[in-house]
Length: 528
Image 1: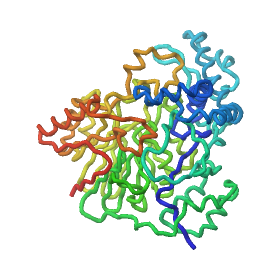
Image 2: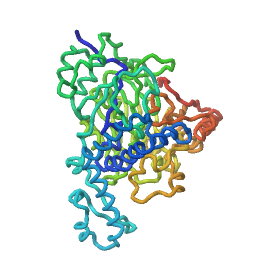
Image 3: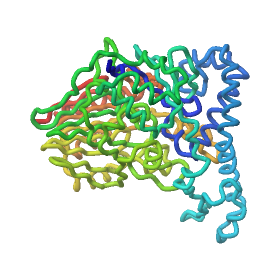
Image 4: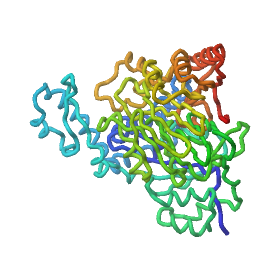
């Protein structure tokens, strides 16, 4: 009997038992996060589990490095610490070498030629870095990231995929603070993310196969293949939807995920999609996607926009993935192109500001993306303007319209837009939240708290709406959908700065005759 993969099979990509996000793939950022995030929080938990439990009860501590496990799990965390130190030993060596390299350059590089300093590069990094000065003569280095992916420092052996059944939102602990321990309801596949068998598995959401066939494929990575049977059903899914109406259809799937369809072409931005299970909150799910997605557009390299959990499940359906080019070799800006390439995505298009991608009946414009990265030199970010059959949609995710003149200059080249979708999470996380392990010099509290990862304020978003002459303006990408709770651990109420700014923006739009809404969970637009 042929079976289908159930629509509520939850897929957790794991890196050394932690939920795998984009900074756990590149060797440099994986090394720093393993040493300065994972090991530190696990050691703290083992020493004081009660302190972690108390901190989790304090709303002011949400999003902090506190492990959401009971004290009875201390022995398992001790085992994971030991496994990290052994199986992840090369990463710890790399992190130490990078730290030593930074210190050596600060002490030795005083403006003289760099040649003599190559002999002082820590041995683990020799052959993997270029020593440089910036235009102010400050010393720095560039990692040869492509080489690191081909070295022992790319810890692909720590990758796994966990399967379980989910029936509700908010069922997972926060990804940055709590490792995933095995439980009775989950089955861990000992496979790397690039493994083509994952594509065979996820195709079964719509294409049935005999259970014995798929079980045989995974027999070498699952001790008990019968444990997989719970994830399959004989009930066929509904047919994949196809938009055949006039003009352009735009569907909001939550957060920054927008599906645009017209004349047989589909474009999806920053996919983070809910699974399909009974819920009182209406939403589009993976079942509402067409059979093929021609273009996936990734806006920037944050974990709530580059979501391996969703991308791995869609990989077999995607024609091309569009990724913004990074500042090559900078630790804080690893290559999205390389991370996806080495995890099995071979259909990548890397773009710069103002690049264009033409397709039948439309065009994708790649636009400068400012802000949201704590004033760090991070280039792997792009806004997108998508033109289809006479309709035009501007999706800028978390970009801040810090310099309105840039938007005016861009407008001269890409034209106007019908709809604007802009993030307005104005409070934003402090600089240490994501990038803390990468700083070679500790942040002061004032630096950490003032350099926020924020979207546009109301006046910045209003300037953008006026510049592009939109008739509709919508705030999104605020992390409020409940199926994102494990990614952001973010709760906004009407008293928050972000929601106050949203209210101001919606009011100013109404005063100018622009239809405006704050999006949540589900919405559909037709641009005829």
